[in-house]
Amino acid sequence: MFNLFKIAVNAFRESLREPVYFLMLLSALVLIGHYPSAAIFVFSEQMKLVVDSSMATGLIFSLVVAVLCASYTIAREMRNGTVLLLMSKPVQRWSFILGKIAGIVSAASLFAFLCNCACITSVYIATDQFRFDMALYFGFLGVLVLGCVIGMIANFWRGSSFPEIASYAVTVLVPLFAVICIATQPHPTVAMRDLAKALLLINFAVLAMSTIAVVAATRFDVVPNLCFCTVVFFLGLVSSYLFQRETDSALLNAVFGFFYAVIPNWQFFWLADAVAVNRHIPNSYIIDAAFYVVLYIIIASLWAVAIFQNREVAGSSR
Image (cartoon, rainbow, N blue to C red; front, side, top):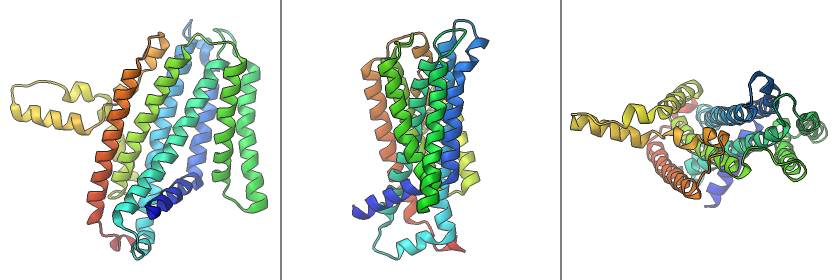
């Protein structure tokens, strides 16, 4: 278990040290912070625009980051022989792959959490149809700049990884700024409790996709893994339409049922429309979604362990 924990911590830190991680994070946060300025192009739907766009940005960017982190920390280690060196030590294959899953899922979850905090801040910035809170807007941008400055200082004085330290700084500053907005600003028209539940469901979707990305990374390189996860994502978006149907063929119904069970239905995790119309999200729905995600992660992790047992890591180092 100690080896699994160390591998998970190293995988988490390696993910945050990747320049693409912080670049994607900064891009997503800036993009989410700018959505309130687009409220002048809609009529009485500024909150719907901000919530839908922010949640979609957080979901898409988090899924891409999960695939990239999985490919960089697993496929690259197989290519350069790091896995072969690690397997020569008393490290079991199952602890290696489970540690990688835990570390990469944690990094992707952190990314989604920060996007969720930015979404909450963006809701408070969008005050009404024709204006938005400039003080909060520039304060949010200032928080991002401060995180970059902290990373630059740590990189200059201590030689630390700029993406890692900047990510840690943003992890502290962005949620803190969101809490300040909640404590000091008037309550928005959106039901914040239901918004928090919808954002939690986005995190559940990221957890599932991160696990799928790690499973695919044991066999595919970066581009094939990205293509594979993209196909899984788009099939999951239309899973109900494609696979949840009855036909006259029992074999075809069995095939549809198999794909419907294997491919996650991402529509279950997308409740932005319910938040936009202030429809209450029951707690039982969150509990069922959490149970579904935990069960899916366990099955996918077992699958990853099984297919990694006969993976030829020595051949990947050539």
